[in-house]
Every structure is written in C-alpha cells, then in structure tokens.
Length: 164
Image (cartoon, rainbow, N blue to C red; front, side, top):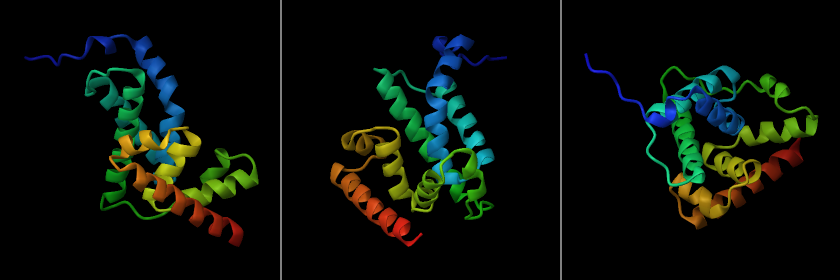
C-alpha cells in the first residue's frame, strides 16, 4: 500500500492553526460575499484549507501564499455557484451576525448583491487592503480592468445606497 507523502511543513498541527488564524476571517468574508450564507462559506473554507495543506506549491513569500489561497477561495466559490443545485439566493438575515451597525449592514447587503466581478475587487481593495496591481495579479486581469471594475462597482453601490 502506498502512503501519501504530505509536505513536511504540514506535519505540525501548530502550523496549521497559525495559518488558519491568519486567513480564516479574510477568506470567510470573500466566500460570504459570493455565497451569502454561513454554511456554504464553511464548506468552502474547509476545501480551501485542505488545498493549502495538501496541494499547495512552495511559496516564495507569505504574500504569495496569501494571494494563492485567496485565488483558490474565489475559484471554489465560483464553482459552487455554478453547481446545478445552487439557487441564486442570498440569505440577508445572516448578515446581522457579521455587521453590527445598520449602516454597515446596508453597505454589506449592497456589496453582496453586486455581480461577482465587481464585489470581488471591492472586497479585496477596501476590506483586505490589496493594491490594484495585486488584485490584477490575483484575478488574472489587467490593472485597467481592475480600475474599471472598482469604478463601476462604486457607481453601482452609490446608486443602490441612494435609493435605500
């Protein structure tokens, strides 16, 4: 019987817990913006951490690892949304647990209701603090495409928030 050889760095449970504490909040926010409910997000996070532990390449830096795990999470969310049984719905009642102020909740609801191409760049830019060049790298887009998505996303948010 052949045994799977796992990378030595993942033998330590402590290292996994460190990586989990570093990435869990950021990845949950990204997944929640795509999926809109806690349970699906937890499933996506589990898959993302499995990929990080057992299927990740060697990284040159911590930033490379962070970009890789963000990209994996986005791809997992997109795949989940494409699945045939997934209905297009967002459980906005769950947002109350993640946004305490009603104004924050309104903004978060508006962001979640944007199309994925706009909400992803908005979340990465404003919530995670990535630069435009880094977002372009993560999403495999040109910098001008990222700038345009940010501009259009902000315009859509402004219209939506003015109406409510």
